Length: 203
Image (cartoon, rainbow, N blue to C red; front, side, top):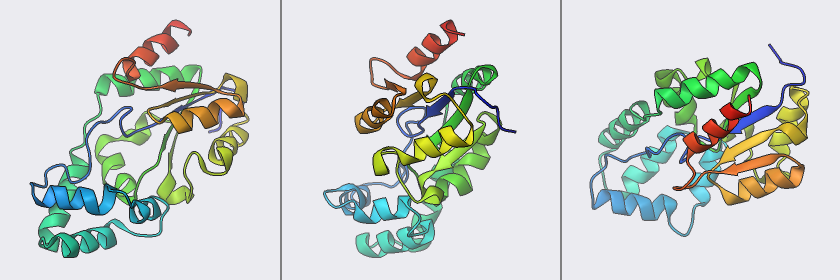
């Protein structure tokens, strides 16, 4: 059900409410090879995966071949790490409690594995009004000057100037502020709990 005229809080996932990474259980030297392969200077393949151009299976097959690691073993590590990601229950409940005043949307630049494995095991759909994943959207938060934000603001008929984005990415925050909303940059000094306390005091 769409809540007409409520402001929206857009909440990021990675490094905002969750600090666990994919393949975190893979041991070195394979871990080092994977990091260079996918997250080094050339992140083209990862970015394309996050926009729906590859599946998790295809990426893992590619990585297994390139780092010389058994594909079945790599896939098991990957899935196990997806389903054991941790998000503070307190944070989820506090975010959900804000839904009486805001529409709370989890908006993440992520992969199919997030929707397939992580969302169900954490029951994330219970705590958010909507979940937006770049894999299904085909775009990042910064694409086309924040087009995805405008789409959700329009869908929910929300007052943009009262909407908030909570994100660890400076570029995302900058784009959102240029649209006219308020951005809260998550950092080691100001984590999600800092901003939740601020939002709760404004209720």
